[in-house]
Length: 150
Image (tube, rainbow, N blue to C red):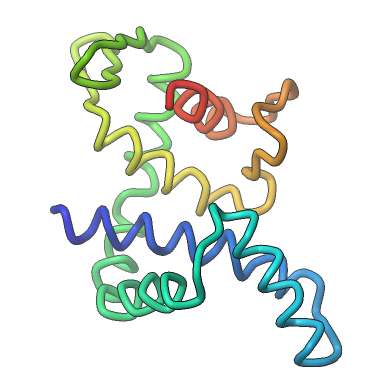
């Protein structure tokens, strides 16, 4: 479902912008706005209007996101581990594809899994400054692989 993929992507973008504000716990509104401005710039110069559109998408799809996240958890973890351990990455003019055993994952599904991995990892999943060398989990490895393939 394309709307759900958009909602997951929006949720990932909102989390990446707002998490640092919640983590820093600024004492004054102006301090929070400064952190927000920095985070918007770090996220591809996202405008505040674009951020509000992402929040709106999340709110409109809250039930679907909640249901999808709960039901996808174990399946996504299994798929991510399978991709990290057995995946063969295929790059073509049509985009990225990963073959694993009898399964094949297209680029749209890979990005959906990547967003899910970011959400489940929280701060540990951030890849500031490029790809990290230390790997702590299959989800982090997966995020690194998909980000590098971009």
